[in-house]
Length: 539
Image (cartoon, rainbow, N blue to C red):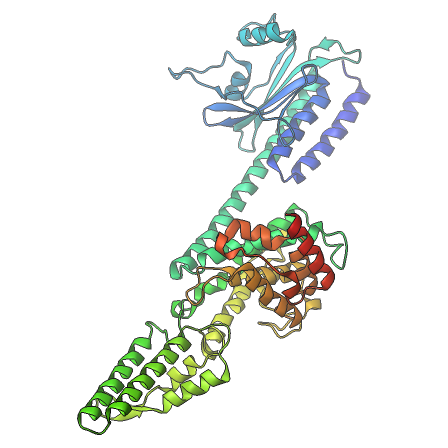
């Protein structure tokens, strides 16, 4: 029998366990702690925790000190026992088994000696004992009920021991304590399940938004998947760092989940961005690529030259030279239309010269060969977006922040708007939308900035460019470090921890993963270049 002092001590322990269970986020660990707490209360040699799954009881955690069983839960070996059916093929209840009886009736079963018990089938237990030499004697089987009174699991303890180690029955006081624990555990378990379901629903809604963006533009779907992955790779690498300015940065599981959600939502504002801007593959593209209209004008110029030649206004040499110039101009316009990293002044001046030519339109009037809008777009120095379209694209981050800040974030996700909204800021304060400096930004937001840029550089599913190789992408990223665009310390971690390579192995095709001459990558110190070169040589 338990003494009053023992009962009081166990009640205090029960309260402490209840608090601990309510704070446990991991389901497997929670189940493990429930069973271990029950065994400690009852000084039980063994025990099993089952969860109700449809019409079956599934083994979740199994422990037995005498037999050395340590299975299930977060830290145990996998359990390969099949689930226990609660009804037979004929639909009759399988309540001759103690755990099934407890699950179906919702009542505790306390058996002093299984070998003397009546009304239950212990043939399997006796066969097990015969094989192992164990004696399964006292059983305490307690249903776990949620707040609605539904049985969601069963807690079964085996062989209570006295102080001398002899097997005894589970007394009434212990039964009450275990029942109280089972009640608290069921509520904690149910709450954990509800939280998991809400988180799953929340993530499904996020994926729904990303799917909607993907449906608008197939070129953003992969981006919404890859940026969160790269963000978490780099954040984990920073958390591993033990030297340098970022040595004190740490992350727990809650921090990682918050950053994951921010990564998934970092471009949610693009749901408001017009498709023709997001998908603008060439400089002259609006709802269609206007290069075809310009091509038609070149054909008109060729026709006019041919007519002039037939009329004797152009001799053969002049006619041939005229056709050659028209084709050269056509090639220059088509090349300019494709976009790229940089367009120099000579190419822009050539376009302005072409624009000054005139042609006779369908209405018979003379007009400039290129309209002011066409010339403006063809003279875009980088990429395919003009200033107005760039402003439209940039507005997506303002919308992202506005949408996210309007949500009632719980405490453990309160930083999502800041993390997601900062990936277009620069370390020197010249970014957008808020012009934040490095000191005004969290490490997580700076991490996401690098992830967003590197993913965009290497992505092969953009309409306006092919994916760049690792060496090209790292060279551009290195120049951005020197230009105070990205965080220099994070750039070094990105390289030293080989985050770029882990990402490449997961997401890039082999032809983009080229050899890197670290001494030629901008922003890499000679010491780091030597270290990375030696590491690459070692494999």
